[in-house]
Every structure is written in C-alpha cells, then in structure tokens.
Image (cartoon, rainbow, N blue to C red; front, side):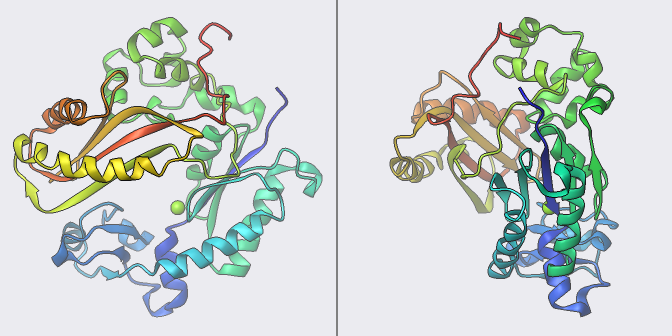
Length: 353
Ligand SMILES: [Mg+2]
C-alpha cells in the first residue's frame, strides 16, 4: 500500500468561537452554547475561559453554572454554524475532493494526491489553518499523519490553534508511548478490561498476539492488534455513509429503576423501526446496541452480536447495561449498527498480516 497523507481538521470550540466572533462583547467572558439550566439543558460547547472552571461539553447547564457562576450560556444558532461549516469545506475542496466530515466542525482530508506545496501535507495543513483564520475569524487545529486514527489524535495534541505532524518514520515511537485509552474505539469499559490485563500503553499491547486479543475482545481484538502498531486502513469517504441508525430520548424526570426503563422500550422500538424502514438496500442491519446515560452523566453503551433486534433482545441488553450503573437514568437510546455493503475494506482478515 502506498503511503497515505491524512489531515484531520478540528475547529476549536466551534459553536462558542462563532458566537464570540459575531458578538465581541462575549469574547472575554466564560461562554457556553447550550440549553438553559432550568430546562435540564446541556452544554454543547464552551470557550477556553469556561473550560478553566471545569466546564465541559455534555455537562448539565445547572452543574456548569455551579462551577462557574459568571458563565454566559447562549442558545445555539445552528444556521450560523452550518454556514461557517460550509465555508470551511469550500476551503478544503481547494486541496482535495476526498473529504469526510465527522460533524459540522471536524473532517478528515486525504491529501495523498494533492499537488499543492509539492505534496507536503504539513504545508497544506498550515495553509488551511491560515485561510480559515483569515476568512472566518475562528481557529482550527490540525493533525497530519499516515492514517485516520493518528491524524485525529494529532489534531488534539496541540489544541487549541495548533498543528501536530506524525511522519511515517515517527509512527513507531509515537504509538509505543500512547496510552491505550487514546485508541479509536477504546471506551471506558475496554480500557478497564485492558488495565485488568496489565495493558496501559500500546507498547504493552504489542506483547499480545492477534489470536489472544481476539479471544479477549472478539473481532475488536484484531483491530486493537493493528492500532497498537499504528495500522489503520480505514479510507477517507467523501460521501457520508451511515454507521448506525438509532433513536434516543432524554426524559424530563429521571427514570428511577430498571422497570421504568424497560417500560420505555416499546415506544423507542417503534421509532427505530420507522427509521430502519427508510434505510436503503446498500446497508445491512448489524448488531443492536443500547445506550444508557445515568442521572450523574456517566454513560454506557452495550452492543451485542447474536441478539435479536426485537423487544426481547433490547430488553436483555438494557437490563445488562442498566446494571452497570444501577442508578436513575436520564437518557435511553437504542439502535442498530449498519454494515455498509458498498465498502468491503473492513472485512476480517485475521490470518493475513
Ligand atoms: Mg471541535
């Protein structure tokens, strides 16, 4: 495989940055974009002044105000964010057509074939950062690496307003020192399991062969084996193919126990069925999953192969997920992972490497 050049671009506190740009009076204040505290609102984004007080996205607005009583919370203006996002993507398109947006403020770019700057991905990333700053008056951070997973870690490395480059010959050393919790797809539960096995860095993870990891982690074990070696062959998709279909609901009043959670399943399932019916034939339904966010904002997701995508299957998974926290629930979500029948590149190739 030829060497790829991937850039991950991520705007710094995007919604808040747009608000500060459009209303300079807000610029020096701790600022958050989100819902109001009296309506169980949640912080979507906050600026770095607010972060200094411990305010974080996905935190309840009420909690945020406790941490930072002077916090200014403004309502999201999605139209303004979408317009800015479009403008940034217009800049990206001057360098490549291989752009995969992850959200309004984040995208992967494959610039392997880009002729600008003699093909230097570093200089392309510098130029993108300069142009976004001049044209939109907000800052973006960028990561440059030979693949998506490393590019994404790199964009976070020097945030905000930073650039970090991992060249192919730096991959080995960089990944060795990387905590496994930074790996794509490793959440809290997997990180804990790895810790129990005595694995905290990628260097330690490399002591495990592929079959041993598959025994412990199922098909994700194979992925772990690759990531520990800096291998990630996922392509940059320039169309936004779906990964899953889901439905979730935040309840006005916390659901106190498992029984009250299970009572909500039929309604969620009905909405999910409606959404599944609109998925075209280029996808095949895969593993079902549930997501539970508890009243204290800890959350867990559980997905399981071989479980039915019906009331019985979701009941079983929700019961299991609930028991991980066993406390009142604020949000329930259910969904189905999708297998993309148009992309065959993520098939299991257990014995090939
Ligand atoms: Mg961002």
